[in-house]
Amino acid sequence: MHRVSNTQFRNELKQFVYHLFDALGENPRVQIYNEPFGLFVEVDIEDPSRYIGKLGDGLSSIQYLVKACFGKKYSPLPQFILDIGDYKKKQISILKNIAITSAIKVRKTGKTIELSPMSPFARRIIHLTLKDHSSCKTHSIGEGEQRRVVLNARG
Image (cartoon, rainbow, N blue to C red):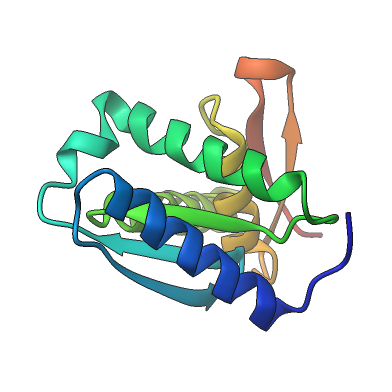
């Protein structure tokens, strides 16, 4: 394994994702953007639902495959999220709204809020959305599938 420059990793990731969907008979358009949580890999194809699957399971499997391929080559593996048909983009928007709405409640009431159990991806978005929030702080509790975010008033 070896360290990689951000540009080199981005180029290889873009090519890999392009060739993966091309091999599946798609004509993909792949864009990569920098986001606070890492790289955002956007794949535009004609029928994204075929690959997203039920509750995003297909998309998660594709991302796992891509990470497994790159994880053997690069250490540490840069953070990235693979998105098809704006599925993850919509999830991120919903999670940011949950984070901000919850932070407002914490500020108004001064009471701790414990969110429902979430995936590591969802918790990361909540934490990053509120990391610089002036009136609340976050931490995670629980184990495995019961792990969730807690918001406390700063004070």
